[in-house]
Image (cartoon, rainbow, N blue to C red; front, top):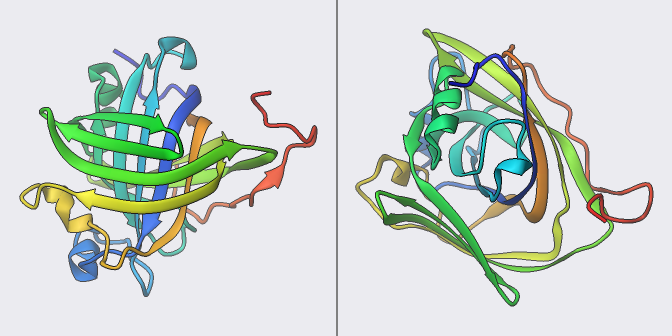
Length: 236
């Protein structure tokens, strides 16, 4: 079993990250615990990603994951309160659960055909969330910064700061985000119609860390997209 206090590194995951305005803002806000509040216009975030091989991690192994949550005022976006954490790996689920994440079993896959990418999250083999985006290719832009997520452990709020570096593709256009099971609790986070995406990217090479230990949840600094100093993608 992994020690939940240990930091871990993941490199070159395939990742779709989105934030949107929800269809039912009041239902979303009701999921926040005491001590946290959403902004005036509540936002939902979702990350669907795949780590294809165990050599891409410092000990977590290969896995796929979809996590969702609610952006919290004072943290900066993206980041916030995790509401769902659906992971394919028992090892990773144990590690995340010990850190306070709301874990459940699930499988996520990403498939690209031409300029269309589909990311799908499944639970017990049944499709739960399907994202369809139009994507281009990586260039000279690098996206980096810190995401800060809040969880609860032993009745106390705790937070983790996750640094990341990603190579986003351009162009990037979200066609649809479909929540397919109205009876699943995650349905409360479904996007509004018409779909309003406030932030998002797809990266075929996204690297990040799970920090050692946990800490508070003060605002985190967000670094804008920029070119690599070499003028080349970091994976070149």
